[in-house]
Length: 380
Image (cartoon, rainbow, N blue to C red; front, side, top):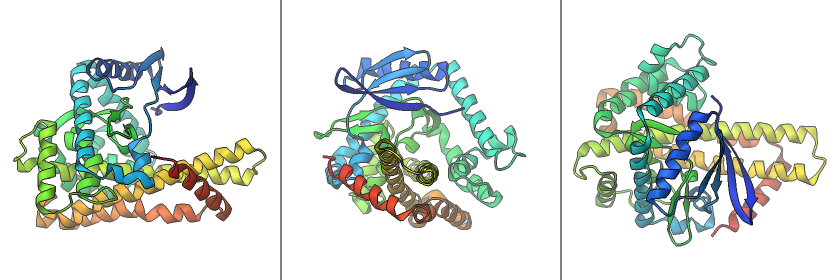
C-alpha cells in the first residue's frame, strides 16, 4: 500500500496542503478524525474533503521539528511545552479511540500487516503471515532499518517484543503517529497536532515517548534526565495519559516504548536520507539546466538535512534506555540480546549518516548547507 502524498498550495493568500491518501477508506477515517477533533478542540486545523481520496488541510505553522533543529530550539526546552504537547496528543488519541469503528480497526490491522509482509518479503520471500504475527515487533523494526537478520529478529522478539506484549493489556490503545513533524508549536506555546492517517494499535507510551524521550533521556531539549526530576516528569506523563502515576509498569512501558518507537523513526529517517541522496545525485549527474532544477535540489537537500539530524536525536533515545536502564527492559540473562539490538539499530541508522553525506558531491553539500542554514536561521 503506497503512502500518502502531500503538496503545498496557496488558497486566498493562506497556506494549505493537499493530501492524497492511498484509498477511500483511509481518507474517510482521517477526515472523520479531523471532523471529530474540530468539534472538540478549536486549535485543530480546518480540513475539507476535496475528493474520496483527497483532503485539503489548513497550514498551522512551524513544526516542532523545525524549531528543534533551529537556533530557536531553546524555547521548546521546558517541561511546560512537553506537558502541553503530550496533553494535546492524549486528547487526540482519546477522540481517535471513540471515532474508530470495529470495521475501521479490522481494516487498519489488515492493510498494515499486508504492507509490512509485502515489504519484508523483498528481503526474505519465505516469510509468511504466521511468521510475521509471531515476530511482529521485530519485523517492524527490521523493516524500518532495511535489514533481515535472524539473530536480531530472535533477540528482539524475546526481549523487546515480549515486553511489549506483556504490557499491552494494561496500556494498549489505538493511537496516531506522534512525531516532532506532526505537531506545530506556535511562538506563544500552543501545540497543534495534525496528520491522522497513520493509526495503529500499540502501547500508548510509544506515542508519548517520541516526544518525551527528548526531554527525559537525551538531546537538545533534555531538561529532566536524572533522579527525582525525571521521576516526577514520568509521573506527570502517566497522569496526563490517565494512568496511575505510581504504577511502576508505566515506567517500564515508557522505556520499552521509547526503544521501539524511536528506533523505528531512526530507521525510517535513515532510509529517507538514502532516497533523497539518490535523487540529488541522480539530478546532479544529469546536469542542472535551470534555476528551477537548482532550487529543487536545494529543497531536497534541506529535507535530507532535517532527516539527517533526526537520526541522531532518535537513535540516542534508543541507546540510552538500553545502556543505562537494563533492569527496566530486561533481566540480566537478556543483556546479550539487548546489546545485539542496540548494535543493530545504531549501525543501521546513526552509523550510516556520514556514509550517506560523503557519497554526495562536495559542491552540492556546500550549496545545500548554505541554503539550509539560511532557512533555519529564519525560524523563530
